[in-house]
Amino acid sequence: MADYDYDVLFIGAGPGGYVGAIRAAQAGLKTACVEGRETLGGTCLNVGCIPSKALLHGSELFEEAAHGMLAKYGIKTGKVELDLATMQAEKAASVKGLTGGIEYLFKKNKVDWIKGYATFKDSSTVEVAGKTYTARDIVIATGSSVTPLPGVEVDNDKGVIVDSTGALALDRVPEHLVVIGGGVIGLELGSVWRRLGAKVTVVEFLDQLLPGMDGDIRKEAGKIFKKQGMELRLSTKVTGVTVKGKQATLTVEPSAGGAAETIEADCVLVAIGRRPNTAGLGLENIGLEVNARGQIETDHDFATKVDGIWAIGDVIPGPMLAHKAEDEGIAVAENIAGLTGIVNHAVIPGVVYTMPEFAGVGLTEEAAKDAGLEIKVGKFPMMANSRAKTNGEPDGFVKVIADAKTDKVLGAWMVASVAGTMVAQVAQAMEFGATSEDIAYTCHAHPTHSEAVKEAAMAVQGKPIHI
Image (cartoon, rainbow, N blue to C red; front, top):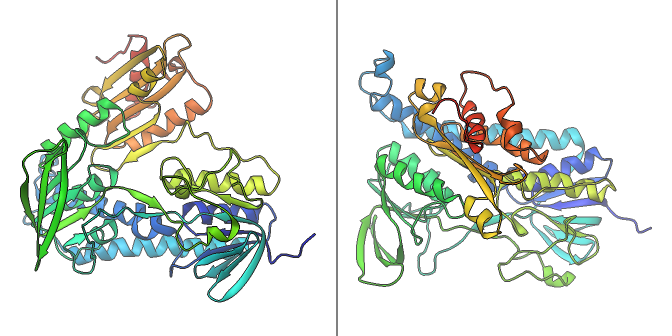
């Protein structure tokens, strides 16, 4: 048997790579993880999921205090001022604590952090910062980066045309922020700066927001964000952006073609998606190609066509979600260790962390019908949920989609202040092959937002109680 430096080496310390490395070490494998950032955690912890949630939460608190939302509870605040630098410092503290926590977990589990960026020399050898390392198995977990918009040059340092990284680090509240892209990232960051005082315009190529989510969710999103004060320019494409000093001028026109017009802004956020990070890996040195979308194809066990090379997370097909990558990291580590690692890709929840939150798992109603399935749908409005009503959170609903013949839950979609937490119970139910009746006859604590899930399940049979 060949003599390797490591049993397994992970390239990338994002949610997939660091979780996979820890699980591999727990399984008794000598493990290393290559990461070129100064801190572990990848995009998610450094410039993605975690810092954005810190700003979302901070901006929600500011809006409640600044716009008299607390007055009805007898809380008088007087004049409220924003200290953006302090809010940004709190965000940074959250990031530092969590990234440092991963470094501690690496030490605890005896995972070696190899600092730098890896390039394949052959299928068992990588070069990092001028040194070579060998491993019996190598896992590509390099994540993704912002998809550029042709002809629009992002310069986060100037703060006029920014990507998601730049939008998280602004040192001022823009007067007018134009968000190019009506997906998850654009709406989350757009909502942060709207709450802090910016005028926000969202330009989306499609005729509705949140591509890929259930049609009812997408319609509700349009209503809610419009009510909150965002200007929505749907079915509209950006054909160019010019910058003069601290001002940007966008040229837009209907997606189907038509008369062009301009929009003036002092900040433009490009949020049209993300693309896999495979450049610079030296995949050509091991005979591994990417598909038309730049992704690495794998089998069910996350093995590529090259023996000993595996891939997980944003670099392989599927939704680019941190929790998907984490589960794949655990699964691939277990497969390499000779155990059985499986990810049920039919049950991957997705969440938009605005206020309210939008969440879903499984099939949309449209996808179920396209698949030729006969379905029953139950819906329940949050305004009829006692906890949501008491908390002053009436927006939204829960929608449960079940097979008409077997009653098996095929999907669930919801809009609520804590939808991201509520969707977990449906994901778990689906993992066990639950029916809508199983959810309906499960006792839910009262008063909770999650009772709306129970009522929506009851509504599948046409028998909700509170509407």
